[in-house]
Image (cartoon, rainbow, N blue to C red; front, side):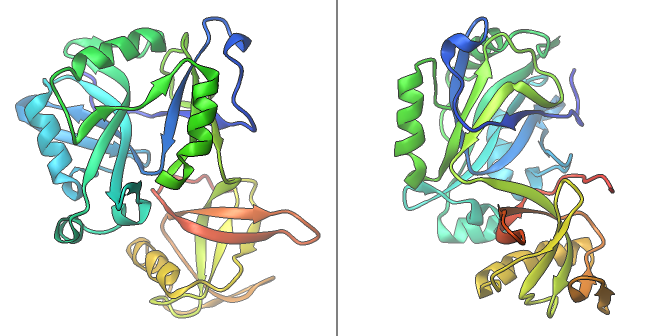
Length: 299
């Protein structure tokens, strides 16, 4: 039986959707949803682990999803997919950051949208091509329904481009093109390519400017090792969104002097934030949101 932790396969960012005939066997085009990536392991006795990209178990935060998967799917099955919350007809990433109790009180539904199948009882499927895994996924989910469903996907390029343009207002981030011939391998790969509406990057939160409970700016470290101060000033809602995961990761009691940006309170644990980085005479980073925490290597 395939057990956690398992590293996920990650698409590379691309500027445009690849053409269907640009790779042997062609591509599957699927929606890129704005949620929490999670591997779903159904274990003996109906126990379910929802493993985040940072290898954290999210099932205590999404007990309804875990309960549904444990009741409807056999032990030994492993899915890859996205946890998505919905508000007023669109995907709401912010509501995923709330507690289960808060979401239930507000009537915010959550679904698990599966886009890959890594294992069936007694069988590790990761070496199979995506086309076979996709067909097996459809069979495995037959007889299930919301809050569990298979992601919307197509082989038609024109349809994929229509989705990219038309579904942005519904909270769809973009489209992922996956080579039908691709095996499931951990880490980033050009066999899967994501095209997103916004040119954003994930960065590590390394410090807070201002009070820990209501910071007015962030010190962030980009994947290339550069450190930037976010601008413009955080809104009250953004400050609240950052304060809780920063506190959980650990914030220094006293600020230290940064050589370029002045007094800052270091954040000791890993917190990942999404940024819009604008390149110019002096690069600037605009805070977008907190992302699911991932391990970040030290430069």
